[in-house]
Image (cartoon, rainbow, N blue to C red; front, side, top):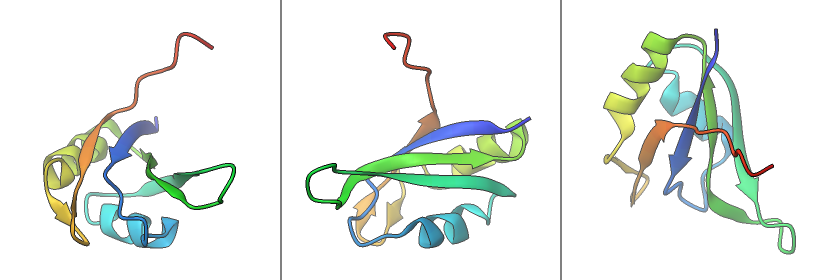
Length: 85
């Protein structure tokens, strides 16, 4: 079962490919989505990574939460569903 992670503090210069490459160190990455600003098309500095298993997701949190990535400190935790929608 895939586990979705919230990733904040993504450098604006990062691409989905660079995020996928980094998170692959923790296990199989099934998808990456960086959220873009609708007006400018530029990164908003956060996104979501889906890992193949719960264990790989936990390993990714331990490896990247609070760590420097390309000059910015990442915030990585389990994504919560937006219950307001």
